[in-house]
Image (cartoon, rainbow, N blue to C red; front, top):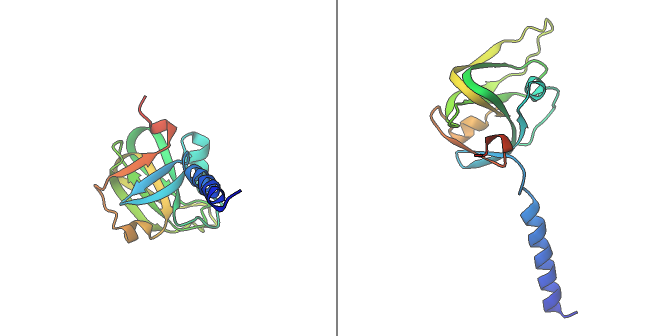
Length: 153
């Protein structure tokens, strides 16, 4: 095989690998930053959320999807890492942010709630401090991709 053909085969294989990396992975884009996300769209996954995790990559998060838009409140029971809790309306605009929300270490199992400032249909949790790093503020719009539950019929 000539060097030229070998190079073309290697290049084609690399392109195929790269094309499939994040092709079907759900994501949210906030202020130009893309976060690979896990989707919590039923009672069981929404209840568990990010509990019992010791770390999360800086470009990862979890998107909670609710069937309706209304005031929401989250708590940090059994959550081991501090988070930014970003409440989003049905148009994916930021309603409010609970920044640098600490894990609940209460032995009495009483953990404070962190309510939205208005009705929200989605909640994005990312590592604490990321929203401030990005300059995220209420009214900012986010985008989503590869999330079956949010794709137009």
